[in-house]
Length: 113
Image 1: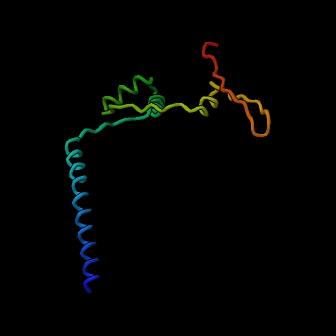
Image 2: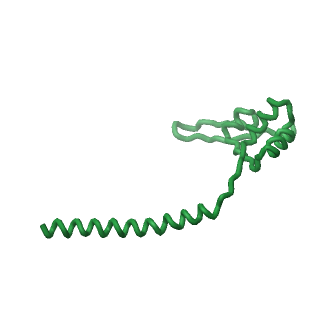
């Protein structure tokens, strides 16, 4: 019976210690969240371009309209190599030398031509 009580007491003490340590972390998080109430409304550039085109506006006009409605941030997505190849602005070329050896290069289209 004493062994059971000692094991139970150890579990209770460890649970209390865990709760105390967690409460310190949680209190810091709560104070940080309470101090920061800033909110940003952002939209992707592609979405703004689509919106402007659907409304018969230029990108700049659409951006001004959305800014007046509360938009205060833009999300600019990076282009991937796959998108560059699909758009014809890059080409993947390569020569297979052997079964495992490949030489590949990525050629970018010259925008001036």
